[in-house]
Length: 418
Image: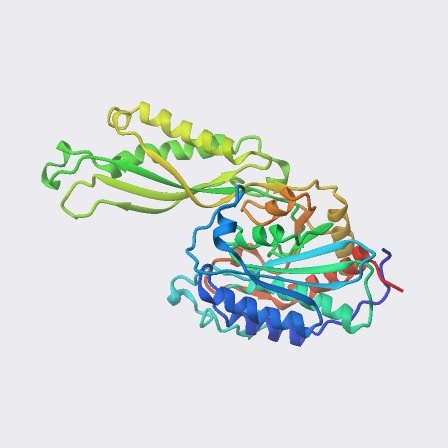
């Protein structure tokens, strides 16, 4: 698996045009455009000579599986897609990426223009999904294309996996693994700013239900406001987050906190002049590296039980905890894993600097791969700071650097067939 001396040429302009076209398909998680984007990408795989499997995922069968990772967005259908190219005498390298994107949010904040325009300007490609993570998916395709165009043959195989449902739990990668598409190592080209990420924290989605006592607002002290009671809960959530972030892994030292606990939605009451007697809030609980999700749930539920015991009303009307949606376990490989060394060494040789190696504070499909005993890391273009944000973009220079690195990694890992 020696490194070749000449780097196959990337079709940079075609790569950027392809990304722009893909961004124009608004493949929001759970929407019909998810499937439309998969069919579009399947045509690109076939055009490049990849053996392509595009299949409709049996949602009833997959979602009833014992280890199904959860799903938040309702779906009537979902599509899996894998393209494979190479020989049969070497190892198999998976290049994985998700084609689904989050909704664009408040359109007035998109000063860069239409979120699904795929606009190219000043060395950047703009649009929802530009960095998270359609750019990485396109880099996978064009890195392999550069090798094909150079007339090189591989001993092993490259397996390009395009998956749906990553944003809400991991449906696509889960179904792809169940279909038998596994390899000897995997690179997920999530936005890392060209850092190497061998470890991802987990995230569990929760819902809290509080009960109060409604009464006319003019005599509010005779009732029990769930908003006021939630303040007691909120303080315990803050304390729990602090406790859970003590002695975090050194891989997570760049984040504060590395395992965030946050509340994202809240709904209370049903009339302005009534004391609210119901409150529902939803949030996410960060899961530490190496921590079992069931242990994180238990600690959370015990904290809610303790705080309810400290309050006369909550003791009689305890908070109800519900777990739903995506349930992301943590996942990791060692920082000295051969795959980490390969990516770091290749990046340094090509680009002159050693990439940073650190963990990530969010859940990803990495944990599904490592749970299947596939060494996996993140390495890709763009910054997570721009993911899920208005004016999302990816630098073209990041895409070129990522694709160049992937070319050499493929050649080294899979081997060149003479």
